[in-house]
Length: 150
Length: 150
Length: 83
Length: 83
Image (cartoon, rainbow over all chains, first blue to last red; front, top):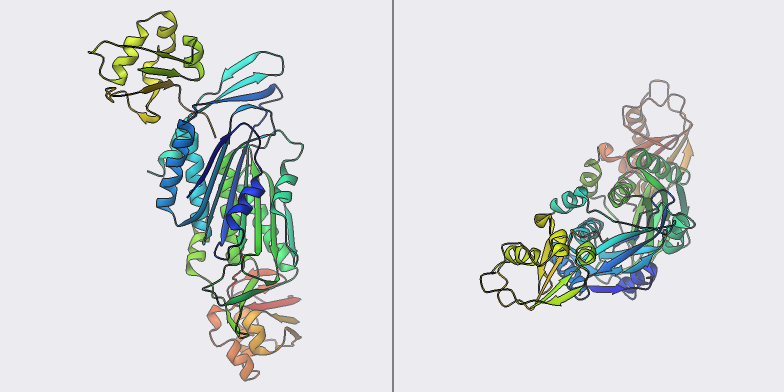
């Protein structure tokens, strides 16, 4: 059963990973992915992440269920933040555990690729100069990354 | 410049990951892999990891340098433990950071595949019943996993 | 039926949600986009590149050919950029 | 030259390292394995599946065809199982 959370506050990647291994002796591999807000050339004050409440949780849960069907996973955690996020801060966390590393790695990549293209989140740039920047455009590369799993 | 450590004591995956992102605004993706000692059906007391001192560090450093040449990485950390390691305990850590997630994921997988097949470590099983078990045999699957990068 | 908008679709239309009552001949998501586009300049602007607009019915992604009958909530938004 | 052994190669031979002085005609890693195998049962046992034994010269992996001339330290061990 996957743990899915959509939240404004930051997350603790280590605590989430620890929750998937604590008291167990059957986990062989833990893959943790953290996606951070990057500054695009010193002009970004923050990204503002808008999401579709309700659907965001449900869609990530659907993706997690698909991952659990495709790979022999022992645990899946996915947390996605919304609201204003400054450069250097966390945006998204995916943790997968499995007996074997290949399953944990592939499932984490799959989750991130699908999260990028299917989870209802949109990023808007806020600039240091006070101007509200552009909505970040979806990347073809992300669509291609997601397509490789189909 | 990669951070490579071969040590008997445990490592703190979160602290190692934090060290690669602290004070930076250009990191977009952090992939952390932790490999743990698994119990094979309730009979394992511990794995004993023997290594070739000197060569272990050098070989992992060579693999890390190769990863840095193949992918646009911002940081690489690899830590491998030796000595007796009980089920549920950490064995190996790989952390990669990059602006983009594909590079961080691929480099971490590459490092683990090469570490498995090239780093001079050997695992021996110690059983709960006091018997000294077998030396763990190398897996063909690990060789195939490493070959996909060549 | 309730219609919800996100990101620049929301900004262009100037609201996040509204209740609409399209006529019976509006049967698919694509037809609903067309009908909404006729409601004013702000809608026309939001849906000007109609084929790029993504839609969800009751919180599930759907194609523009999907029938809207029985839908409680239909969402329109640009391609996602989370993660 | 110094020879070092690891894992079950070390256990079978009964020591972790030793200094050896092979004759001049022993030129490659493979020939060194053959020469060592003739030193006693424990060596024969350690190297019985010679082609599976891995070798390193001065801490770098080498094939059995590699020349040993100039080597300071030659290591023999089973396939690695770290990670």
